Structure formats: C-alpha cells, structure tokens
Image (cartoon, rainbow, N blue to C red; front, side, top):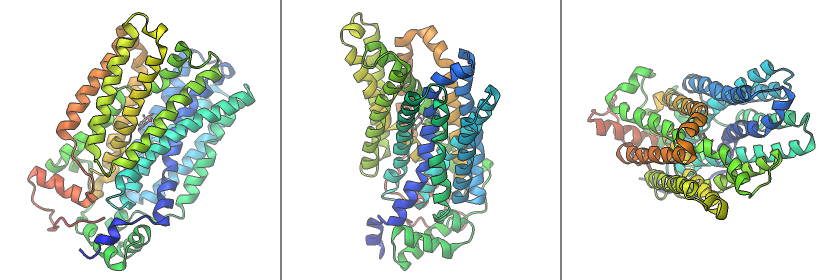
Length: 474
Ligand code: BGC
C-alpha cells in the first residue's frame, strides 16, 4: 500500500485542535454533572429544599440527559456532527446562564433540565466526532481523551465549587453554575472553525470536501486521502432506520452497546464517586465541614482523572478487551474486599486507610477500563450510515441506568447494608466480565469500515449490496 507510511504518523495540529475542542464536550459533561454536589450544599438553604427536592434536582439532570441523548444522535446523522456539537454548545450556555440566574425552585429545575439535555447530547456527539476524524491507529487513545476531559470536568467542578463556596455562602452557587458558560462558549465558537467529519461528508456525497479534510486533519498526501475516502464511499448506503439495528449483522453490536452502557452504571461508579467523600469524612482523611466534603470528592476524582491516562496511552497498544476485562477484574476485587473491610470488626476504626485505598483501587479499575472503553466502543462498533442513531440508543440506556441507580441506591443500602451493596456491585461486575468476554469484539487498529465488514462476516451476511471489498480506510 502506497500510503502506509502516511497512515502511521498522522499527528497534525489540525487533528490535535479538533480533538481538544470536541473534548470540551466531555469537559462540560463532567463539570455540569459534578457541579451539583457542591452547589446543593448551598442551594438547600437558599431555596429551602428538603431531601426529596434535593434528590429531584439531581435526578432532573439525568432525565434531561436521557432526552438529550435521544435527540443528539439522530440530529448528528441528519445535520452533521459539527453542527450538532455547535448546537449543544449553545444549549450548554443557555442552561448554565439560566441556572445561575435562578430565583425560584421551578426556575432551577428548568435550568438543570436544559443542562441535562445538553449533557446527554454532548456525551455521545464528542466521542462520535473524534472517532470519525481520527486515524485508526490513534482512534482509541484520542476518543479516550474525551473521558480524561470528563474526569477533568468533574475535578474542576469540585475545585470551582470550593473556590466559590469559600468566597460566599449566599451567591457562591451562582458562580459555580455560571463557570460552565466559559467552556460552552469555547466549544460552540471553536467548533465553528473545525471541519465536518469526513464520514458524514461522504455519506452526503461531498467527496471532494471529505478528501480535503482527510488530507488536512491526518496530514496525508492527496493519493492517500483519495484512497481513504474511496474506502468510506464504497460502504455508503441509503439512510438507515432504527429497524436496521435488528438486522442479523447489527444485533450483536446493539447488544454490546446497550449491555456495556447499562453495566457501566450498575457496577456502581457514580454511587462510589458521590459516596466516597462521606467515607473519607468518616475515616477522618478529610474534615467534617461541607467544604471538606467537596475536597474529599476532589481527591477521588483526581485519582480517576490521572488513571484515565493509562487507557489513553495503552488502548491502541494492548487493545480494548484487555483494558475492559482487566479493569473490571480490578473493580470486582476491590468491591469484594471493601465489603469485607466494612464487616470485619475493627478494620474501619483501626485501619481506615485500607478502605480509602480500596476505593481508589476501584476507581482506578473503572478509569482504565469500563469508563473510557464503553464510550470508545459505542463510537466505533456501529456503521457510519446509522452511527449517530445507534449511539443514541446506547447513550439513552447509559443515562437511564444512571438514573435508576441513583434513585434505588439508598433503598439498596437499607435492604442489603453497605457491605451487601458493595458485594451486589461486585456480583454484577462479574456478570459484566462474562458479558464482555463473550460479546465484545477487539477493534484495535481496525478502520471503522473494517469493523462494519467484521459484523457482516460474523453474521455470515454477504458483502454489502454495492459489492464493497473490505479495504482499510484510516
Ligand atoms: C460515566 C459517568 C461517570 C464518569 C466518571 C463516565 O464515563 O459515563 O457516569 O460519572 O465516567 O468518571
């Protein structure tokens, strides 16, 4: 192949800029989900929120995210990836400004719904865009970079909450929400200057433009870009519908996307993230005040953020399956041990650091596997002609499962106890490992087009109607 060499370099300023800007979608996802834990400490006095209303403020974001996820994918398939990101960036601005200006509880709820809507859309469109512009041998790391941005967003939310909380206990919460406007403006404004995804362009017959984008973003020669675009073009089909997803070759892809979406949440990540500060306070590594609780959250999230770099660095070398299955193994072991640490008398009081260490180990397991690899896989396992819509279905499942866990967690702790709840999460993680072992394909170093062909071959379906061969695009 004449373009092999060009395909192995591919770090261009255009690529880096496009990935970093799209990852502001991840940053906003993280900031706007994380901001509430600090803000609530002040909102409850400002608006007189009882515990039911406090929980509802948190759940409203998740409901909004389910709706945003349902809208974002089909929109990306129809109007394009770039315009969809810009639209969601604008919605983030409106939602953050609206929430910061809240003067009544109903106003606050509407603001949090709008922000949730934007989070749901951004959570799928950022990985989708990055996946489609990246060269295949860098795709895993670049899409996982979005998860780095998510965790950085949560970390910044804690730090910003801390800063505004220290500055004022009456208006500080307004600053916490308003801070989200800055990255939203960068996302919407910056993406205005970025190219559309070459895959979307080819789907819409704009082959010349697609070739220019591939050449520029991947630093390829005209011939190499031509051959990449040709590989994409060979698989162009008329627009797909949801019914296509139950075709034999796509059924397993759908199962993998939805299954991992649900497992990513029902293995407990968000309960651990938000419960950890309480544990850290209990075992005395942070103080007892609200501000100390915020700092405790920051500690856990800092570990999450740093450990995600392992996935970025290794996912294109060791592959998706190793990190996913290995990471979940670490999670299951940590959860099992956590349960024992809580029931064996004296551990919590005499060796509190064991509990803290096990929480960190669990987070590291998530950060190197299920966290980034779920978002990466759903951005690569579906065919281009229906990628946005299919990602929507997986992402709806993810946010719905997140909502389900958040509303049932306290009941689970009441019924099973803390240790029992950790063991339940450990059991679910073992099922998730078996699921991944059986169904999740290895997609390392494969072009998105080769992944499409792989499903067809596995299902024994003959090559696409237009007789595409299965050559590799980047
Ligand atoms: C998950 C979120 C989670 C975050 C934490 C994301 O991949 O979808 O639910 O809060 O990771 O790192």
